[in-house]
Length: 114
Image (tube, rainbow, N blue to C red; front, top):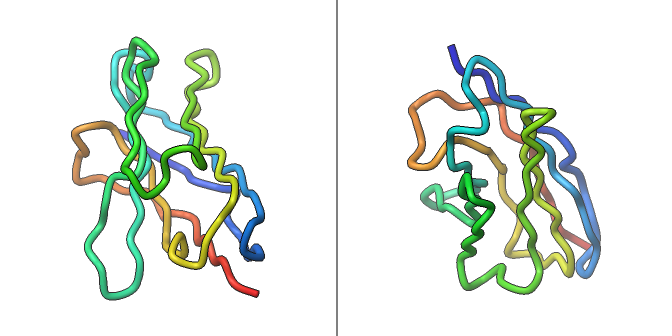
């Protein structure tokens, strides 16, 4: 069974940085595309970044140039480096395969506020 454990969130001031990690188990990690998704209060979940098995990356326009997704197939881990954070980045961040399966980890809260 797939297990996803996200970490690295926290409270940061606007303009700050965070690095999120997602450890995956119960899956042939290298065989899957992965994505980072976020859900803000009162809003639908959105895919913010995706990394394919060939390391091709795709970002939603609102995070382009600020976020970088990467993966380590030796450690079954996906990362999201977030720079120049804005208050509108505040959300719970989850990772999942892409397209996502309906098995979610606990997520990690990111709060951007002064």
